[in-house]
Image 1 (tube, rainbow, N blue to C red):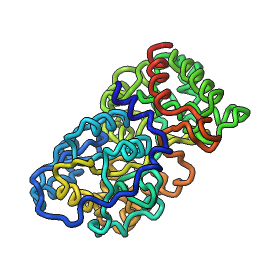
Image 2 (image 1 turned 45 degrees about the vertical axis):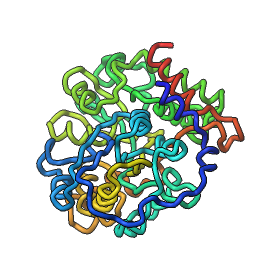
Image 3 (image 1 turned 90 degrees about the vertical axis):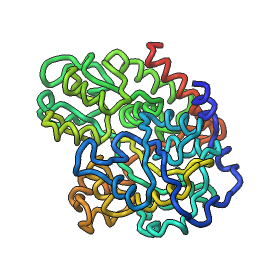
Amino acid sequence: MNKLTSVGTITLAAVMAVTPALAQVTQIGPGEGQLNIVAWAGYIERGETDKAFDWVTKFEAQTGCKVNVKTANTSDEMVALMNEGGFDLVTASGDASLRLIAGKRVQPINIDLIPSWASVDDRLKDAPWHTVGGVHYGVPYMWGPNVMMYNTEVFKEAPTSWNVVFEEQTLPDGKSNVGRVQAYDGPIHIADAAQYLMFHKPELGITSPYELNEDQYKAALDLLREQRKLVSRYWHDAFIQMDDFKNEGVVASGTWPFQVNLLQADKVPVASTIPQEGATGWADTSMMHVDAANPNCAYMWMEHSLASNLQSDLSVWFGANPAVPAACTDGRGMQTPEGCHTNGFDDFDRIRFWTTPTANCSQGEGACVPYYRWVSDYIGVIGGR
């Protein structure tokens, strides 16, 4: 935990103070024979879960770079693994990427060596979670909302509010929600509570769920302590959460579209929705370790990752949005324009994307609660304190 805390204390000011650096790689040579990636569950598929989804096998055959994947369940775990080293790439969300840049754990990317960069969604090319001082520290991979998954036998109609996971109540089947809901096992879940309060307690004056002053932060923690009385499990493993919906009586939780898709394919009675309060979300970036042992294979993979057929199939598999808009329309993969619309491709500006909370925020220098406190206080909430 010391490593997580020390990385979490880095402020955005520290990030902006990073001296602009040049990309370490100026040309791509022969592949080194392997590539080690830290990734979210479901991001790097080789057909083992479903034979229809495989974007690794052909890459390995074409490049000679054997892909090894370490699945991480939270952004903090990703930061810790990259801090320890031994990996070439990470698919970092916005609440990890700036910490990795500030901690000098990732290196600038030479976009001139990535021919498909021009195909990247213009909304993502210069996104502040991977671009500092005009320098790119990664290649966009995928983005989407954190949705509410619910059991359709309990909820005949989609829940209209996140209150079913935050406040004790009787559900439509006449039973209490106590012990039947889950929450995410990561301090960034504090932002979900803050977003809920933005809608229901506007007098708090919250304008961003990632920029909370002491009073706003206290209100979010108080809500999470009430939620603690309802939660059967704080989930971080996608497959354990799916088992809980199948076998343990869980009927509602925040989740990723990935779990929804797999459960529906398994004929489990679940669906997903974005309630009236809106949703937080993630925009993930492939970032290269500053000491990557296999940089040539890493650059080959980053180019490969932007192929529209890969992006298309990835977005179908995960239920999210491709970083390459053509993946929605060019027919090279499984995705369709209707599918992208369903996944929220047109709702980019409505999603509050994960980012690392810092003390210096729009409310003033030192006005907001920094991330290291989110880490320690959320551990306390889960522990019943």
